[in-house]
Image 1 (cartoon, one colour):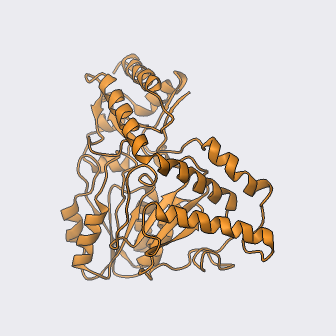
Image 2 (cartoon, rainbow, N blue to C red):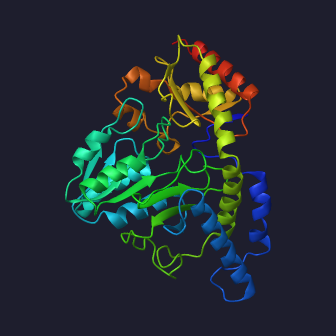
Image 3 (cartoon, rainbow, N blue to C red):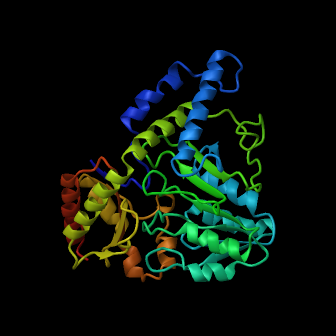
Length: 371
């Protein structure tokens, strides 16, 4: 199987699993325990936390709260920071943010949704126009999980703070962390990441917090783990996998990015332009290429491609049962484009031969569809 749905999830890295195995079978202790085994597990957590923060931020400025997933990190950020007034986000967010903002209305906070450009990036000026003296939170996705468009969160955060210095700025960085160059500046308050998008396990995520941001409150109450901000015994094995996978990813970040950018453009170059339309921007994440075969059904072609030995997505895996992508609808695409969407997303283990075979299969599937 040629796996090209890495924006949905990634295959766990063998090296990370082997190294982390010890924390499943030998050092399986509760990191809150006071004996030596517990202390050893606690040391692993601190090592992982320090490393993960240091790859994208200054550890003197940022701390990290381990969570069960990126969605939990998004929820903790949003429901901690947006408690009154209004909160601003975009129509291009992952459902973890979008649905949380819809829930804010039930909690007395006015949600505001900024429009998108055709490539899935936010209309920055429109978003800034929505920020006022009552805005408690702004949340902008860093890399679109649907198109790969990259939002300039540093510039957006700076402009938001100029309008209202008290506004908390959060970004969902799940598709950016370990894939594109990220460096969080002082304007960023909260940043969500996920392990299973970079070769680690499902069930592990984290929320980075600027130490000057006091808006975060406990989302799960109990034993007071994670400095009282996320109770529950930590998933040491999952966090170890996250740590070791991140070590591998960040050691070859630039090299992998160049390789994958080449594969992405190679695939696009081989697709039949009389059939396929490109949705992803040229300057987006190298990891995501979203296209459409107008007049076809993306989910039908997805099943055909699976039978041909190629796995691709049709948009956000979290919304795969809905008829059309909410995000791409917000980009302004007509129904015939929305019907035929396929999302191809790469990993460093993909090869040029796989890319060429996938392009051939995509062309064959679209032609045999009879659109």
